[in-house]
Image (tube, helix red, strand yellow):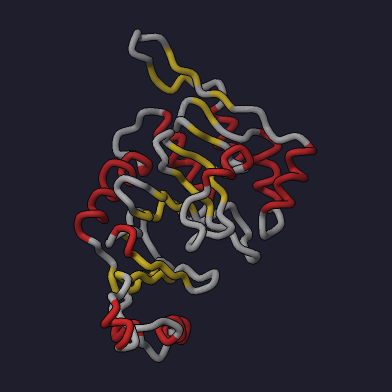
Length: 243
C-alpha cells in the first residue's frame, strides 16, 4: 500500500477506545499551502520528492499519535537536535519532552528518509525507518494501539538498551577493509581514540549513545554517509601525544 493509500485508510477509521470507552477516530491534519511549500523549499537541501509533495498537500500529520507532529518540519525547525551529525535534518515528530524523530536529508535525498529517533534522556540516536512510508506505517500502528509497534519498541526498549550496552561499536582497526574505502578514509581523517558506528545498512533499533562521555563526547560524521564516530575529549597529556 502506498503512502497516500495508507493515509486515506486511516482518515475516519475507528482505531480504538479512549479511557471512557468512547471510540477514537483517526484523522488527518491540514496539508501545506503554497506559501508553506515555498518556505520548505527554501530550507531543505534537496527537491521535494513527488510522492512527498502529494503527502504534504494532503496532510502534515495524523491524530492521534505523538505529541508533536509536522511531516514538513516547518513548525519544529527551532528545536533541531545534533546539528553536528544531522546538519540538514527535519524534525517531523516529538514527544514533548525534548526527544524527536528526524528525517536525515541531504542534497541527494529522494525520499523523506531515513528517519532517526534522537533522544535526550537517554542520550541516544536510534534508527527508526528507512523510508517515510515505513515510518508512516509505524505511526499508524502506534496510533492504533497495536502491541509491539516499532515506535514503542524504539522509544521504550531499544533506546535504553543502546544507552546501557553501547552496541554496534567498531574500532579503527576493524574499520579498514579493502572493499570499503569510505570507512578507511573516514578513519584517516580523524585523530586517535575514536570508535565508529556504521549505520549504512541498519535494522530498526540500531544506533549509538551520542553523549557517552557527557559534555566531553566529541562527535563526527563522514559527509552524507551514515558513518559516525565519537571519542572522549583527550586530556592535556593525550593531546601532547597526538590524540
